[in-house]
Length: 168
Image (cartoon, rainbow, N blue to C red; front, side, top):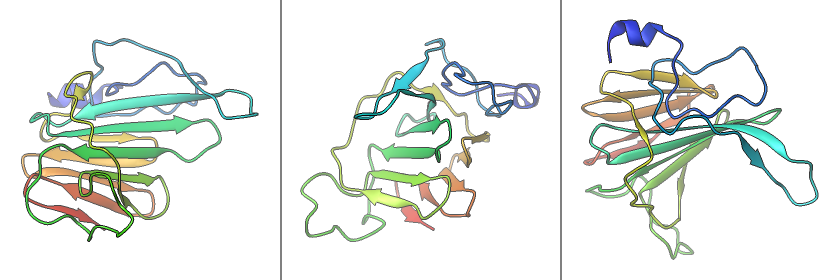
């Protein structure tokens, strides 16, 4: 991505805004999927409108989804499909699903390693080129040849690469 593209008001896999907040993600490019308004339904609640961004690294080995709801903290979930070495944390005894592949956090608070089935689908994501820094939903993510680093407003986050994954 060129510097001119980084300076434009662009988004990475961003859906239509349901409410114009004046904030837009920067530093990533829009995908071909187009815009989609997402309504999140909670039992017994009125539908809440949300923005969703998706992106992956050029290797297609790390894929992320960012969700931002009106009047709620944003969240990000990133999955590293193929990894080596030990997981960032020991597997909990009660974890019966995949461990060490899926990381998540809210825009405030600590990052977590999730016990969940690893989604190995490799399509439908826009590319965060190496050297790109994206800011969206209370998060900053930097894509580099070394891996993907994401942090939240509190400075918590994770670094993901095939060889090593860490929480901080």
